[in-house]
Image (cartoon, rainbow, N blue to C red; front, side):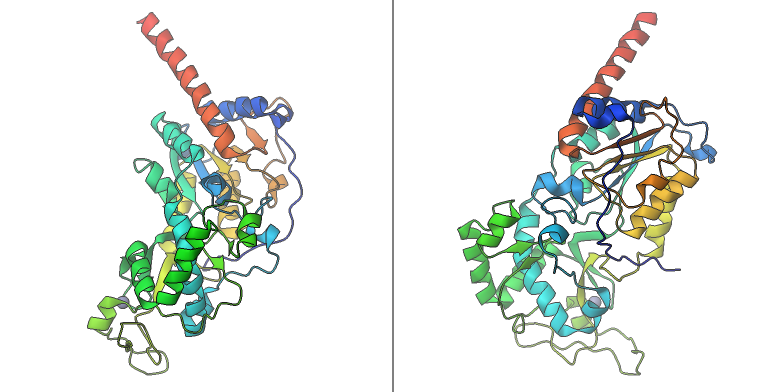
Length: 391
Ligand SMILES: [Zn+2]
């Protein structure tokens, strides 16, 4: 069965903190340290998983400190903008109008994402990798912060990445950064508006309320809502490869695939091919089977999983944690606020658990992970001093 990416917007109940001592910052640091340094659990079903390494599964919450909005946090998109509805795969692939609207918004939103950088939490993840604590990272984020912060530690981008575009006909990928310059050239009035928005500081502030006052709303996929802006005139380029060599495709209705552009190179109807899509898994789109399989293999090859900054609202992420639970892996969750169906993961935690079997804390990753790293470094330092004293 294909795995669709669909949004889930029901409110989530508040978490039950595990162990109870993890309800303070220092208690949470101690519990997470226990979790990450515990020997492999005796309940692990897969022998390949007994390497003691943790899989990190991250979501929008880890990028909030980089100035990006999450979905369900206090300043999240779904919290502040109840009417927010992302573009769906079916709309994007079939409607020229939907694509104009998407690219107009994305044109304005890109600057914020492009200027944003990995934060303390991503650097802590890099360090955890260097300390040998992690098997890899699976992220639901499309901001590329993980691969930028720790290229040596494998990252699987479950929902793709905004840094590239993919052609729906030939599957070639192109740089989003170069595409931004093409959009500016094709849409001079929008480029002027963008310059004004940058000058007004509306794109500088991280506070969605402030942004709104200055006339802009943004969401985690890099979109900005522009009140009363005409999307109908927005232009976007066609795939250069398909333009030069029209794909030898026959469409389901028997028509030949063709690409037409206006005098400036913008895609026009009645083209039937050469449409560029952000290289992300849009809502309503299936996760590519090879990515789904790679994610499952990554889960199966790890001793435990730590969820960071995700409410697991997308089923694709939730089912990976469910799989980990079925594998007998200890589960940890570091997320501000509730997580979908989390009671299932913690139904059998023994009372004497200090964090090594399960941990659930409600803290910001960028505040807490650097301290966990320092504690683990101290522990490893002491161990190596002891080892050299014995030698
Ligand atoms: Zn193409």
